[in-house]
Length: 257
Image (cartoon, rainbow, N blue to C red; front, side, top):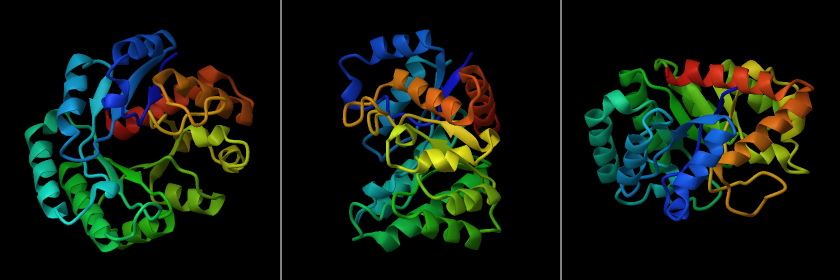
């Protein structure tokens, strides 16, 4: 059995004291593939360093996170693009990119420009995109529809929308990234997942954020991916092995590795 975490920030300083131990624990739990989304220019070195240490298990993405889009976004984009081109052979997605209308709406227009710019990179390089869509799922669906001349594919990371939004995302050819939120008592995501075929889903932790129940509010760690997989298995009344098999196969289709 192989489980795949399609979204983890395992390179952040939150894990500096016990990263290797956590990695070994996860590997012992059959969690063998970790896809690392970038945040901004400050996170590039630590991310790439981790992929070099675990080349068989950790895979890099490169992008500018919407929460890092400020006055200097053009400069940040230029540097990220430079790294993306330099390391192209070892980059498996453009991400994480998107819009965040929860924390700060000061740079909404700049977030949109940044997202579209990075969508063009992905199209040119034939890479998937991994989308951050907090409080902005409808807006991003509309933008992608308006960019229908681009060949876009990938994941709506940390999907927590309703069934209609899920269907729209799937109709666009994207997968739903399901993480700890599916275990939250009143999230309603379990009801959505129940009605979506497993072939449209991938697993993620978003570690160190969004730890699943019963660890909600604490640091999320790699081995908690199994709790997400077990919850989906229970919702769908199938085995953990089935969830692992299908979602890992989905991740291979998306990332090509």
